[in-house]
Length: 277
Ligand SMILES: Nc1ncnc2c1ncn2[C@@H]1O[C@H](COP(=O)(O)OP(=O)(O)OP(=O)(O)O)[C@@H](O)[C@H]1O
Ligand SMILES: [Mg+2]
Image 1 (tube, rainbow, N blue to C red):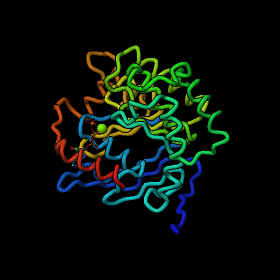
Image 2: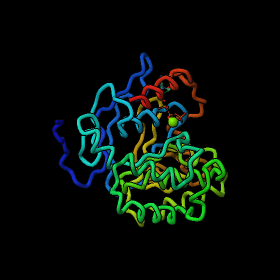
Image 3: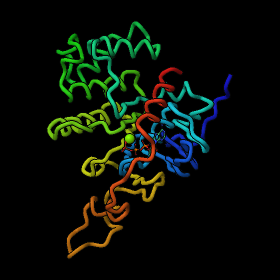
Image 4: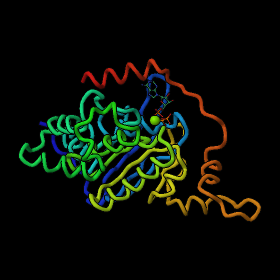
């Protein structure tokens, strides 16, 4: 039986210490340390290949770090994997719903996976369907829903087992502006009503702007971590204009377009390995 290793600070939802992840000769995450407080809305903002998804996958126990420690609600992601999985919800960068099943069937499947109580699960599913505004569509196959509806369902599924920390890896990528705005209203509601800690990765500066704190990540390193207003204050104003978050971001990471070190085949292999575990 693994020993439950809990860190002491009950105010901290996520604690990351000296985390390193190497894929052969690529150092995807290069010795990062940070923590996220309970109830906080926290963002990883960084260019392509910065190490955002890799970090989230380690925090969610999908892959193992090369070195360093991660605690979620005090549980060690390696020694207490099951406890960590029960306390988190995860919405992936790429869609993972079963397209041939209905919204209701997808949620039921998730509930069984998490061993949720059969008697109370129906009520919880109804509440979630209502919360994500999809109650009237619950019996439709997923393939008939719009992109925004599918994303809402992914988030709803991530919330079904009432996790205290919700990880969202680019939840609005590929959605139109209206759907993105709706999605943000919805995440706002979620934070108020479910008091969930939200850990988000994004490329969109305006999304990071709404967060309590932002970690700017590039080439596997956290290069700044602060509130949006403090990050803006850290750059010199140009021509007397008040600096924007975008100015701060560009002054921290530069304008160079990032290349991708790992190949698509490497990523597919790794995903297949995770799914087979
Ligand atoms: N399975 C893998 N095998 C080899 N290299 C990988 C693998 N997964 C990621 N990488 C590499 O690790 C680095 C970090 O990738 P990661 O996907 O974590 O970045 P990201 O910040 O999520 O980028 P994006 O914004 O494009 O989603 C990149 O150089 C990437 O090519
Ligand atoms: Mg990513």
